Structure formats: structure tokens, C-alpha cells
Image 1: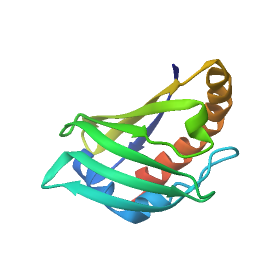
Image 2 (image 1 turned 180 degrees about the horizontal axis):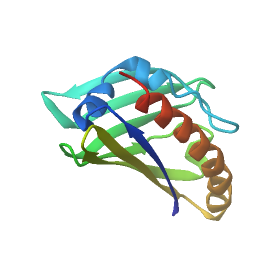
Image 3 (image 1 turned 90 degrees about the vertical axis):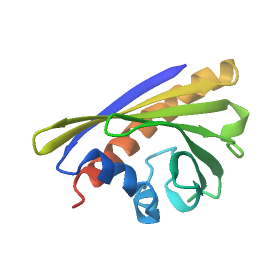
Length: 151
């Protein structure tokens, strides 16, 4: 497993950040970096009125696709998403990723952390995902700043 995390600070409330997941422009603002493509479009499939179970079918700027599913949500505290069903080429060396959003509300600020766990399929994946993680972390840091600066 390969891990990394990024942090941010915003005046948005945790609920505002989570509600932003249901806005396509917050997905397409992920521009990628290096080996990691940006997001071109997302199809949001809500799980009724629940946050947990919502599925995001993602198409990336390089034509690759994957699915992100909210697997856990504790309002105001955490949200966990599973990134899976990767298309080629990522499906050859990565099984799935987990992204955990952690929120800490203090006065007028929310401190957020996005942590990732990347699970390779094989030895080659263990090596390649380390390179991907380097660029992915930079792209997530940029995207986190984008989200944090919204009003």
C-alpha cells in the first residue's frame, strides 16, 4: 500500500465541502499533474437522499475512466471514498484506492485533510504507483486549494 495526505484550511463548513461533491465543476477542476490526468466529466449517481453509496463515474482527460463510491460518511467529521474499476492502463497495476476526507471545525475555519491509500495489484504496480503517487499528491494539493478558496 502507498499512502500520502494533503491538508488545507478554508472558511467553508464541512457540509459545504461535502455538498460540493455533487457539483460537477468541482470534479472538472481537478486538472491533474504529470502522469495523472485531469477529470473531463463525471456522472453523479445519487443513492437516494443518502450521501453514502453515491457513485461518481469519472472520465479523465486522457479518456481513461474509473468509479468513485462514497463508502462512509460521518457528517462534519469524515467522508471515505473508494476509487475503483479503473480502465486501462491503471487497471493493469492498481486494484483500488481509498480517499478519506477528515474535517476539523475550529471557529470560522475548517481544517481538512485528504489522505489516500493506493493498493497495487502486483510488484510492478508497487513500483509504478510510487511514481503515480508523486504526481497525484501534487494534483490533489492543487485541487484542495481550489476547493478551500471557494465561497
